[in-house]
Image (cartoon, rainbow, N blue to C red; front, side, top):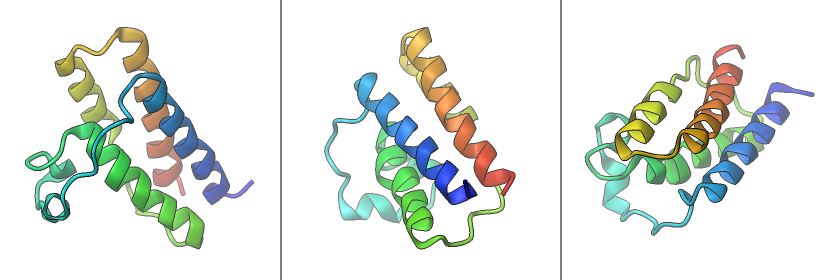
Length: 110
């Protein structure tokens, strides 16, 4: 299995986990929200919006095109901090963080 195949599986796992924890259903951000210069578009989107509409979408495009992956990916700490701040249940937080950690690992070790 190629890294792109493994990444696709990990992205589907993150998507399923977000759906199971009620962090998937949301409105698409406005086009201007995508123009943010802040990390994770923190000034224009909630982190779950960024995960769904930016992070997953961009990595899906790279997987589909079999394009080179970024040199580094370190999103899990931001996800953990957000979920802690939002008071997400410990089990849901663990599942989401593990899903993102796997994506971070696959991209970084590529």
